[in-house]
Length: 103
Picture 1 (spheres, rainbow, N blue to C red):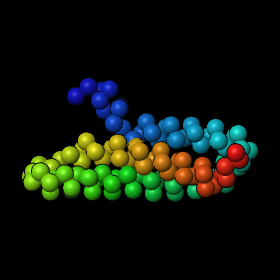
Picture 2: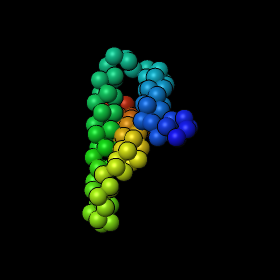
Picture 3: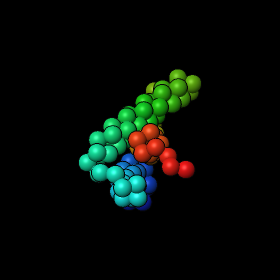
């Protein structure tokens, strides 16, 4: 395994992108960072959990379909991207709900 493979599938990259997105949106919309950080953390965590649950459901479905005893090991492949996508979607939902789209 090379380092690019590990970085590519890491949810920490998505977390860094979401953090930069938060700072940019906070300064552009002129809101208090302390007022908006707790809702963002809540949306990021809930999105990450939803992404992980979706990955678990996909792995369980594929394991049942192929009748594979080693199917649950696919969580190592599907889990981190699921968490990363969940974090990004959580940031988008935060932007739409908390900051009220200004057109």
